[in-house]
Length: 293
Image (tube, rainbow, N blue to C red; front, side, top):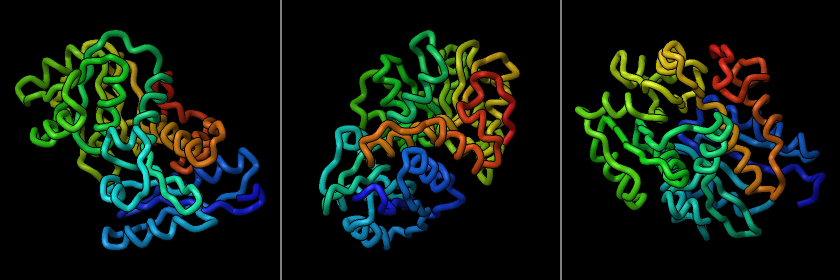
C-alpha cells in the first residue's frame, strides 16, 4: 500500500463500547506520516467470520480482536505467530496480501508496561483473575522468572489457565490462602473487571489485604484510580493502572502491522486524552501522579 493511501483498521469486539483505540491508533499513523482510518466495530459472534473475511482485501491492513472473539478468531486465520499460538488467543490480525496472520500483543504489552514501572524486587507474584488478560500476564511474569499464584472466583478457570500454559512456575491459589499469599507477594496484578466503570464495585480483595511491600498493578484504566489502587497508594505501595498496558499492547500491534517503531508517547497522549485526561500522564501512577479518571 502506498504511503498516501488510507489504511483501514478496526477493533472487532462485542460490544465495542467506547474504545480509545481509534484515537490511539490514528494518532500513531499520523505521527509517522501515514493516513489511517480505525473503527471500533460491534461484531456479534455470528458475524465474526464475515468480518474477518473482509480483512483479506485492501485497503485493510489488519485489526485488533477483543472479547469475546480472541479464541474464536483462531480457526478463521491462515497462520499464528508464536505468542498467539502459545496463549491460544489472538488480539492482532495482520493482513499479508490475501493471508491473515494472528498475533498477540497483550503479552509484550504487559511486559513493556511492567518494565516502565521499574525493577520489581523479589520473585513472588499473585494474579487475580483467569481470563485472556490474565493468561498473557501470567506468561509474561513466568518469562521474567517469577513464581506466580493465580486466584480466581472460579478455581476451575484458574486451573485451566495454569494447565494451558504448561504448569511450571504457576500455581492455583485457594481462597483460604489468598490473604497470606498477597501479603507476601512482591507484585500483585489485578486483571478482573472489579472496580471498572460499569463493572462490579469495590476491590477484588478483602479490606486490609494488600502486599506488605512491592507493587500493585490494576489493568483497569477507567477510572484511573480504582479502589484497589487507592488503598495500595495509601499503604505506600508502588502502583500502576491499566493505561500503560493498553498503550504498549497497541504499540506492539502497530509494529506488527507496519514494521515501524511505534510512536509510543503520541499513542499514550492520544489514549489519555480520549479518556478525558490531560494527555501527559499516560504512563500510569507509578510516579505518584494523581490521575483520577
